[in-house]
Structure formats: C-alpha cells, structure tokens
Image (cartoon, rainbow, N blue to C red; front, side, top):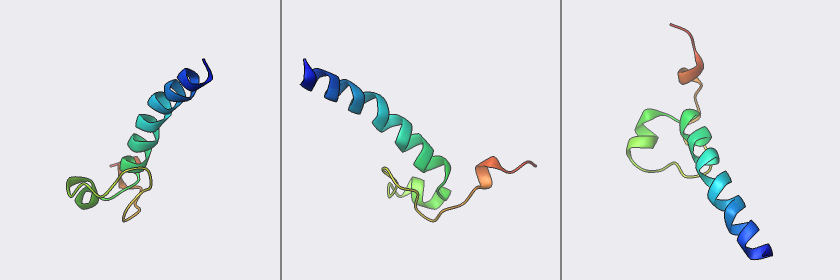
Length: 50
C-alpha cells in the first residue's frame, strides 16, 4: 500500500510542478520543450497586468 501512495503522490504533484515551472518560464523555452520541473529563462510575464 505504501508504494501505491508514492505513485499517487507523484502522479498528483508532478503535473502541478510542471505547470508552475512553465508559468515561470519564457515561451521560447516552453515551445522548445526545455521545461520539465524547473523554470527555464525565468520570467514573470504571465503574472503581470496589462
């Protein structure tokens, strides 16, 4: 049962970390597929108001 909990935690947390890393990365890094769990070419443009 412990391994099932580990797999469940990974399956839940990995996509959330991936989305957070993409939101803090440049669009060029996202399109090239360079973002997995850590932001690449860090920016906060997605969080700035127009």
